[in-house]
Length: 235
Image (cartoon, rainbow, N blue to C red; front, side):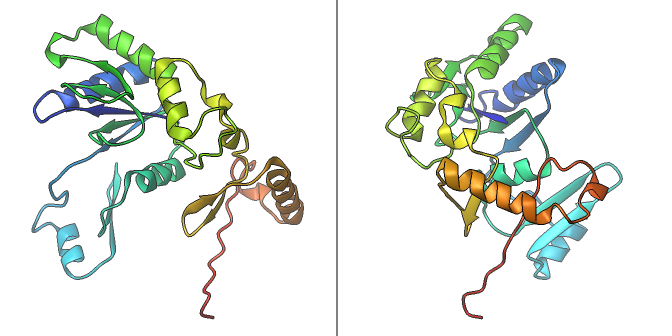
């Protein structure tokens, strides 16, 4: 899943540009999601879900005929949001509205001094052809969730340096060794732990061998298998 942010000052057409990009990418056959950063409360006072939260619920789920939404009583950081989106849907692109400090490719709707910027545009002057060119840039130079391990195996000093190279078109994501070993991802307390190729393959083969006798195929051909171990050190 590649990620691009539409960033800029207030009232410069960020939402308009997001909708144009989403429409163009969907027209090209991609599955697209969005995340909007806002400084206002999302739930409306007086609504039933608002009453649930006021009563003390830590998480509120609204389930309707055509949609489901989750309200969590905490300010989640962007990396956690992206990971949650990846768990919920298999997307090709995630378009962010806002998040100027994020280390992802950006299209700016106002003056933005950021080396990760793919382009700066005046939304009022956009036409179908220019939106298509922006979508081309997003396809070619945006990238997915960074490993943020700074292992240096890609040849760059750290993940940010590689991100800068990808935005310029000087590098591709397949240089990232950690992404190549994404078959097995180990996290402790939400933090990813780097593993060398031998350990990665050893864990994969051992785990798959252990569960081969279980009735997992009744849930469909396994594409993604998840194991969570809840460990309380106080027990």
